[in-house]
Length: 87
Figure 1 (cartoon, helix red, strand yellow):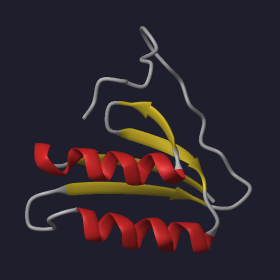
Figure 2 (cartoon, rainbow, N blue to C red):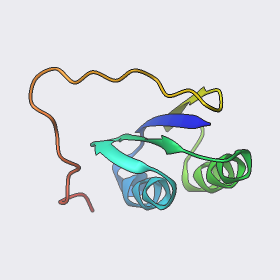
Figure 3 (cartoon, one colour):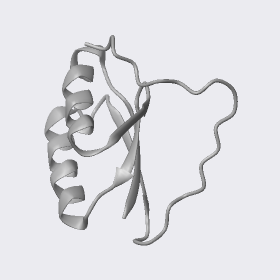
Figure 4 (spheres, helix red, strand yellow):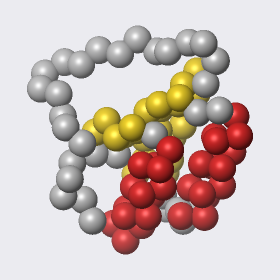
């Protein structure tokens, strides 16, 4: 299935969630990742994210699309390269 992940975490947890997302998905913008994951990979990703965040403060949104589909994606304005200066 195709997955889009958007997160907003406290600064001290950003590096850990960033590393976790990079292990599974493609970095699109600052806190946005996307890519194809199997159901097993999605479960492992979910478990890793849940251990990396503080659920009383942090927010992680995961949009999933059925297997065989890919959402239409448009980019308006300047494409943002994945930042390299994040902790």
